[in-house]
Length: 386
Image (cartoon, rainbow, N blue to C red):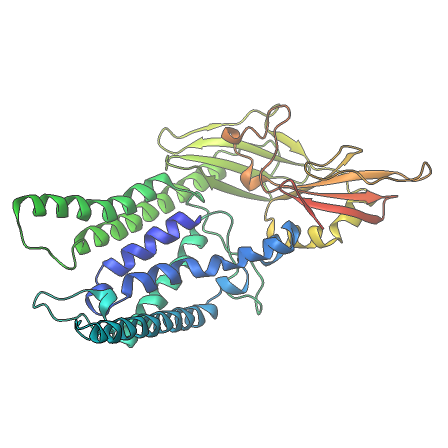
């Protein structure tokens, strides 16, 4: 999922009860829920390197306890820094004639109902970070981009393919859980009610349970979509494999893909009405020829990374067509270049305009091949690998 969902999920995990066990729980949960996506820093090495390493080692089961430990270590350093600052402030005020109460390591946790500081319990804090780090893997598995949870021992990609990468319904649930306690707190202050320290636990649990319900619902609709493809084939040839990819918001709408020995056929499924919309003239993509340039492109850095990740990859020799974001190679008259395009049918959504004239497929890659064998440049999503 995208970072907003991970952030909000971490905040709800912290507020669902862990913040009653230890100070800094919500902070640790948010950091651990986001930490796996630090692998996007590979983007500084280029878009192809980012594709190769994204959702790799940081998105594995082996990384979860490490991420939790690093987050707890960061919180420990923050706590030490805050105590040091408070001690310095206390000494300064003492020399000035004033005094402040000694700093508690639990200042971030607030005070309980009796007015005593909320303590840090490092075991609970580690468990909080561990659960939040696991939530990142679960969320990323639900969408159709997938992840490699057993990498590097098993490099296979796994994808639930029943949630869209960005799901507004989930945002609404999670934002509601974080926003409503603040609104209710305003109302309490207006009537002079006593302030509650751990407001929002019920809303956080409600949002997380709502996410589970939404996921189960979409899982069932996804299974129904696959059943519809199998029972009412959309292609005239026997299907070698099939897939149903999710749309955002609408749990009844699915993007169908069928592969035969000669072509790919796509379509749109509505599981609520039980209808499949697929036009054999509009939605058929015949398998491109494996030219020498295509074979050479498959052996490049981009080609190997893309084919490892692209469950429904299509590789085409598009000729002397400039790739988006990358200038063609400058060659002497006796040499020629061609562009090879990598796309993935999982993201060939009609609402993205990829089928229209001039439409650009998301998560697409390009390689310039000179004289059918030489790599002369690679680009991913309109960014050149340098």
